Image 1 (cartoon, each protein chain N blue to C red):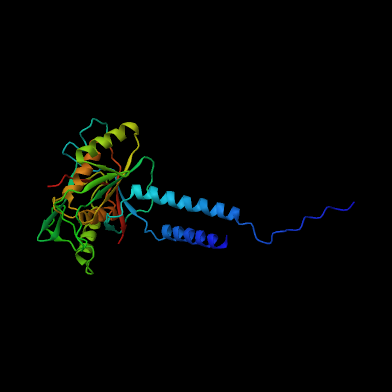
Image 2 (tube, one colour):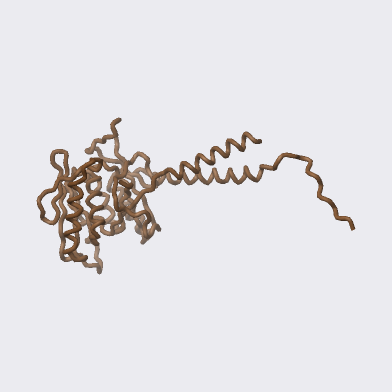
Length: 151
Length: 142
């Protein structure tokens, strides 16, 4: 019995529709990842340098990134250390440190396992950093990690 | 269709390379964020605070940061971008030397002035991590 031969291709062009589908999915993936990362991390914060920081945290569940963003940065990169920085968490700006304490207490009630990542500008004076640490302690959060870059 | 595929591929490569060149952030971990000012130790818990505490005091004078660790004389810190880091190296070696004679149960308290830059606080904490101090906490700004 003669086997039915395959029909010859009438169209000589390669079908690129599946390729475009896949590539579009990848582009959407990278766009969404970028957007989520932007909400967590504020680009205007120049984090301090350190030598002995670790690459990976032991436990990243319940991770909460606190950004302390300096206001009125000068063109030469300097900041006015006397001006209170803005506090941003998950893309939300908090009014002041009292609001931060309340926010952390609420989060702590919802989850017992919270890890704080503090991203503060290297030029901010300690006067603005200490209240964040005290807020964490008051909210009974004892895992605080300082975000740094390689020296 | 071919020009569209070209453009889409370029966009994809742009995003992939963009995500690759972002420098990774490193973390200095801490399990004791702060002491006093109604901070750590105010809630009732079974965990006992260490009996022995030693201080690392950071002062800001004349645009420079000075360190007095474990009741030593004041040591001037180098700025992080200075080429000469000899003073910071001395501080780091001093911490490591001290650690050899200190038990893990001793709590180290970093106590900076309110005007000390965050970078200098992190540098000192970095050296504490290098010296393997197990319990390091921060005092409220003085």
